[in-house]
Image (cartoon, rainbow, N blue to C red; front, top):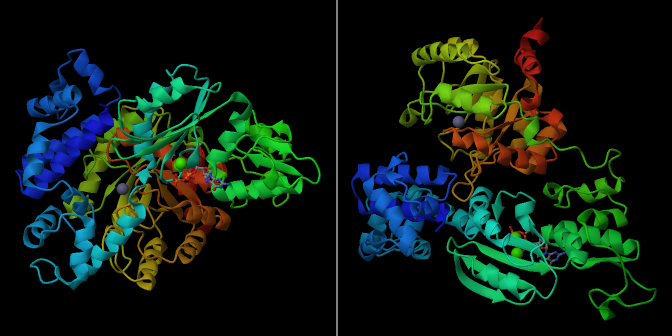
Length: 594
Ligand code: DGT
Ligand code: CA
Ligand code: CA
Ligand code: ZN
């Protein structure tokens, strides 16, 4: 059993215990164990096999260690089976809805017998929920809206989750007999925020029954949906579906292009080909003899003119190679042909371009690591600067920093800085935008900070006009530098709040405020379309992790992928600046007023 799966089982058990009303310490023990397991770089299965003591790991006590060993050795967990005789496992789905916590889920189950999202929807629409204590009309409307979101995303997986789930599968497939090359195509290769299914391509001489056999024998396969000569499909225990295609070398590039998609991109490319008397499919690019009806020819008929490599497909059509992140038919086909833009496809920003991370939290608010640990971790990632940006006091539940404590934190930052070479720590805060657009911090502190981030964390149900006013009022404050996670969305859990993005971006341009692409894989906020618009308007985009732990600083790559999907180049991104340039940027307003 893989670490991700173990984390999934422990998380589910923890959630069930919480619905049951179990001891909060026990629930927290599960939460912390899940965090530990998710963060491990070594497989627990290997550690157990080597007889290592798991209780040496943070947050893994005797019970938790026993659970993990049991999972690895038996593939199941007696405790989970036991709890699920007392309480339906499907209740865990209800808790994922906005507006339904563990207590409410329990109540819905006990009073109305609701165990699934479908049953809850029926009960809500029949008016049976409204009359329960603790649920009112507002609560009902909120839950209904959240069921819509749930449906829209159900069956889709966060990109980061897929990264974790398929790593062991790829390692397994590399060992299949006769495998020459492996690529993951589809939305995964395009680095979309969420993934419907994984499209795995394997290059091998056909026929290759051993490859298919090896695939379906992967340890995490729950169900084999299909297993033919060249095509197979399985569902993993996590629920993730994986399609496999086995492709001979002569067609691998064409298949990689075809199955990377998107469908819309493929359609546009096929039209380009048709104009040139060429036919593109997953087997190659073919020149058809004059006067032949395409409907009458087989897949590989005609003269093969490309297909072994992906770049050969683009080249034969007179196009430059298009990075997969751009293949959404949003102008990349024309750009690659060089007709719409004279500079063709832009040079996209890369992870190596990033010089600093300007949004993160420490133990001063709800982070898990100290200022020093975060700073050292940033240095280890090759950054030249970072901003320590803990929460402001309006977020009382996370221990936001009061003006008095801010001053104390600066002392600590100065001390840490004194012991650190090669990286600069900027003093910052992520200041809450209050209802009326005012900021949750004294002007005195705001002026003393090196960098000010602002963001909305409360009252997200505001109407569009009020929310837009609120955000624009906030960024009009002369000390504001960055608008963080501008729409508040949480993929699969919370829709973006109502906001007139065009107005906000224009205001940001006029005020010289940067906007964030929050790199947390469940946020990725701004989305690609809005980030692209920011670039068009000349608004600087900043890619920040918002990390609450050292590990999560590694989310930067997801933010960079999102920026690339938005066509952003290095010069569009604030935190690609050198330290000297960034210092100058911080002084930009002082410069213009003198
Ligand atoms: P997903 O799985 O929903 O996240 O999105 P994709 O893009 O991975 O879509 P998927 O798995 O249905 O198909 C993978 C690729 O195969 C897709 O991006 C383009 C290609 N493809 C699939 N069906 C068609 C089709 O009917 N026409 C064309 N031109 N391409 C297709
Ligand atoms: Ca797919
Ligand atoms: Ca697919
Ligand atoms: Zn934050």
